[in-house]
Image 1 (cartoon, rainbow, N blue to C red):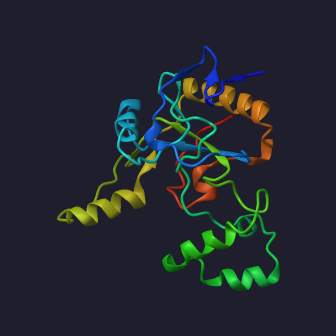
Image 2 (image 1 turned 90 degrees about the vertical axis):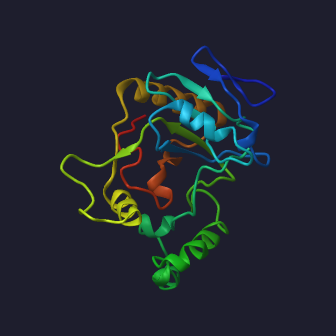
Length: 218
C-alpha cells in the first residue's frame, strides 16, 4: 500500500515532491472523492509559476506530459481546485419534486452561487465532492481552437476571447499521462478509502469547458 508521511506527502519512486504551501488552505480532515483537471497551460512550469504566488489556487498533484507525477500540496490540506458545484441530483435524475422546482432558476448566472450553497448543505454522495473533501489532480494540457476555426475578422479582443472560450477544445491526454493517472487514482483510492464511484472529471462537478479532461482515463 502507498505510504503517506506525517506531512501528507506520498512516499513513492513514482511521485516527486514539489510542494507549494501557497496553494494549501485549511486541514482536509476527510477525503470523499478525486477530481481530475487539465491545467489550461502547455507546460508544468507554467502551473508551478502560478502556484508560487501568494494565496494561489491549485491541486494536490500535477501530471506532466512525460507522465511524471508531482505532488504539489499535502493531502492533509485543502486546495481550491473545484468551482461552484452543479446539482448532482439534477445530473443523475434523483431530485425530489420540490428540488426540481427550486432548481428552475439555477441555470441563470446569478443563481450559480445559490446552487452551490444548496449543494454544500448536503454530503457526498448526495452531492459531488468539493474543495472541502476532495483531492485534485491536474494534467498538463491546454485548450486550442480546432483546425479551421477562428474569430470573425475585425473582432475586438474581448470578442476574440469569448469566441475562444466558446470554441476551444482541450488537447488530448497522452498515454504516459493516462498511465500515471490510472496508477495515482488507484493508489489514492486504496490508501484513503475513497469510493471508486467518487472520481470525476472537473466539468462533471462544476461549470467548465466540457472537453477538459474528457480524454483522461483511469
